[in-house]
Image (cartoon, rainbow, N blue to C red):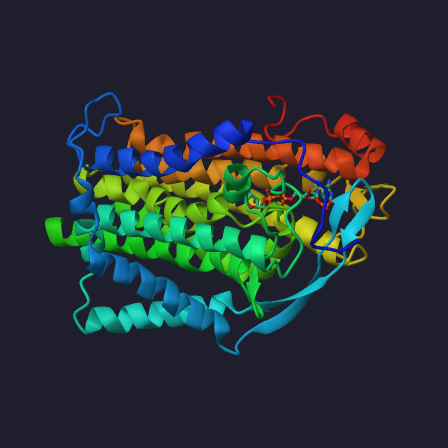
Length: 426
Ligand code: NDP
């Protein structure tokens, strides 16, 4: 079968065409409502109407140029001949029939990009770069990133229609332009060997998130003389998460986003605008709503984050090691279930505890990131609330895929490991 021609997508997600259309406006609106609310004294979601900025005040060519320069810098670093090149066998499955067995080459040099970026930012700061500019222009920068995400998504959709270089996405081929634009029409769009989705997944967004956090820390220091313990904790926890993602960059090749999702507005906006500007909401909140943390409370929060991180990391590593080499001594002793595809499912260790132990660890960490912001406001808890919904929805989508892929073996796995994310609860 021609790998560009895949069957029409029949099962539509996110509420179908109408849902996808609404999300094109709702997602950016959420970013701006939350950022605007965070800046108000009350920081309350009930405090309506918000002081709305005009489009003119949001559009600043200099900030757009800065966002472009940031993405451009990351693209240049991505192309540096550092790190390693790995081939990854794409297996887009329909039942057990492999539709596309193309091998794609990926450049794994995110950790180098991260260190070079840190060095450039450090040198820039010594030379007088004011990182608090990020706080002062956060809305304009977020608006520029949103414009860029829309622009990129339009180009991606046109490319998928006119010059698809790789397979189309199984979930983004409904024939409805709005739906396919939202979900992503092409699976792994590339310009030569430059993989646009893989690049956007981590580089501009995750490093942008860490940079915005640092901008908030610098702003707080300018305002109050030194950074608060709460701000230091939020920065340190989230930096650990970002560094971990780059340290384990190769592992994203087996995630749903790379294997299954098309590259369209959902991921482009998510990676370029949603992640950097909303995941940094806690540090943004702390600049205008300082919190005092006692050392014992801070110690408890650090322990909680450590617990979440160790569950998250060991669960993800266990599955990655197993998928890469099932006879690796680290996983060889674990119990497994055979499936008709030849791949086995882990049924002991972390993956025998709940069906998505990595989500559980991620959610524990998300809670620890909000706690330094105190309990007076709900706004800094947006991340954990949204993330719980996202992971419950994502888990349901993954279960659906796995049931299609593994059939009876998946049912057996669900019988032996009855809880999805939270032991004895869900
Ligand atoms: P997972 O890494 O959980 O991968 C799911 C896949 O793992 C399944 O499709 C299946 O694929 C395989 N699998 C499931 N159960 C088993 C088992 N028992 N034994 C062996 N393999 C199994 O999915 P995600 O891509 O959703 O998540 C990756 C990480 O990224 C998670 O830690 C998640 O929390 C995090 N994440 C973070 C986000 C954020 O915004 N911060 C957003 C989304 C995810 P197969 O069998 O084909 O290998």
